[in-house]
Length: 106
Image (cartoon, rainbow, N blue to C red; front, side, top):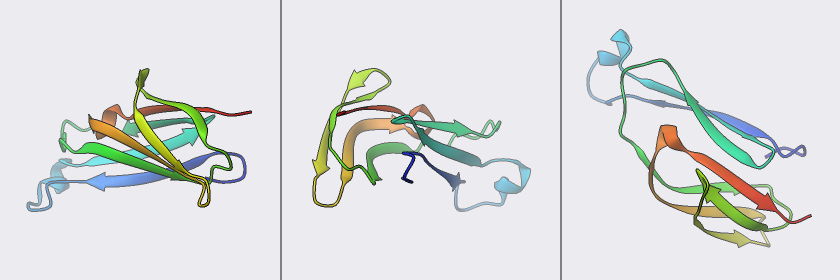
């Protein structure tokens, strides 16, 4: 996370075995963190990797959060004060459905 509290990144997924990606059978996902809200947007592909997210780690926080939710539901989390890393445990959320909100201390 940068000094403005934003971050972004990309993830490419395909079946890892065939050449089907040449016909568009792949997922290209963009992760965006802004205003303590992490979202994922994907390409317009019919391919679904079926990958699930069980943990998300976000580095760069100065203070620990008050609460963390996934799609509006409370989730388990921990914060390493020394390293400034937030670790969020998720119940196997499909990667395209990732929608984390972090309520920070003022």
